[in-house]
Length: 150
Image (cartoon, rainbow, N blue to C red):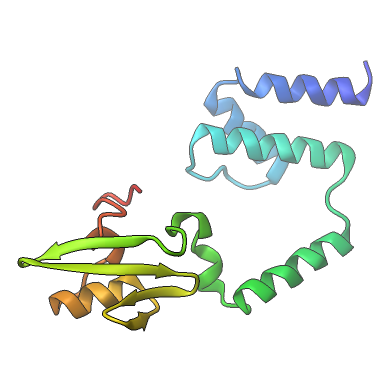
């Protein structure tokens, strides 16, 4: 059996491995406790790690290039890195919300939002301007429910 066959067998076995055993593998491969994420996350990260250990990870030059690209995108702002770009509606989308009998329309921009001809960096700031109280903008505009699900 070649190394490739062994790696492929380990990857295939992940699908049928009980979750407690996946967490055990995590501890062995990452030397940390498994995060409290769903099974699919564990499977995908374990599959990557198995291949990384067998075939090698990214070259240092590739890691440096990716870090440089990340810096260009977010200017080193760690908060922006934690916001998933694919969660935000695409630029041009109009969000409509009625509040106390008045309809409010917000346009999604590449770098923020526009309401009543003014730019805003967040939906929460617009919701606060509309209501006079603090709101999670994503909840106010119906993009997320109170449990945080999109």
